[in-house]
Length: 316
Ligand SMILES: Nc1ncnc2c1ncn2[C@@H]1O[C@H](COP(=O)(O)OP(=O)(O)O)[C@@H](O)[C@H]1O
Ligand code: SF4
Ligand SMILES: [Mg+2]
Image 1: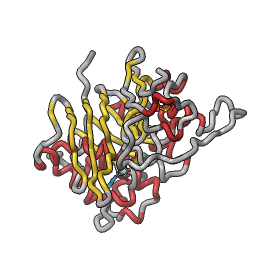
Image 2: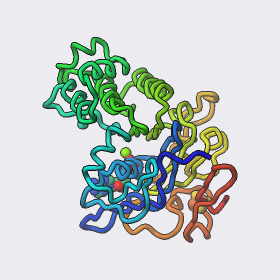
Image 3: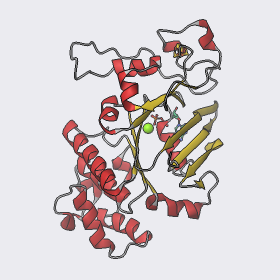
Image 4: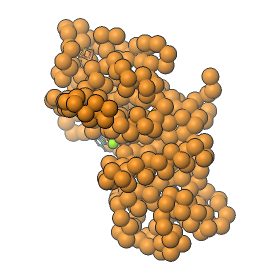
């Protein structure tokens, strides 16, 4: 087996709030192979963004990485100094944030923003490269648009611009955090196709964070399902979507329409994601689980169930 490009081992990230410690990421382990696309799914508040903010070195007080290892291309990232991290971001790992609106600087033209990234990483002829990247992501008349400000772009074009900036230094790993949430369906598909085609062209790895299992089915080789700060099920996409083993994964699948079987009713998961302060030791899905039994109140470890597949449930 090839060395993973990214390897996260037992990562724990907490935020110290006045009312207690929010354990946003509580023992997450995962790998991403070179060229692979890994999907991360789970309801809002399950720790998806915080996990990858930790990879990017962007956890700031009151947040803290409490434990765990993050290895990228053979290098340990936890505790890496700020200057090395700045070099790594953009050049080796790039992340597009959930909200394109806030992640572009409204006071600078998009040209300044993309050229700055290219120049910072020592790219010659940054202006021509910027136009090339913008054209590649499907921004029409790129040369002319360099002088425009983010507010002059539509939501879809802003997302593309963010992808162009993220890709402008040919990262080995692109982390796309809910790249389509704010977009209409047609533009969503265009942005995802774009990421997929650039992945194929550049051979980069992609982490696709989404709450949409349809997106995972179409674009990801493997998927990790997160719930309340933990991975509850992980494995090959076809296996997980074809035969989910964790009741939470089953719930997620039942809550989205099945395009192959439109007669199947859509059933949302009842209840809410728990408060991540002072969680009881047992299965975190217990209060919402239709299959819960008494032993679910004891700690439930992750178990290997066949080739590359892991499930955290007493039933498996
Ligand atoms: N800056 C912060 N301060 C306090 N709590 C935070 C902060 N950022 C995230 N959290 C908490 O961490 C948990 C996980 O958040 P997040 O990773 O953004 O979820 P997801 O991306 O899966 O929707 C949430 O309960 C959220 O409230
Ligand atoms: S461990 Fe128990 S409560 Fe948790 S998902 Fe499995 S059956 Fe449900
Ligand atoms: Mg998020």
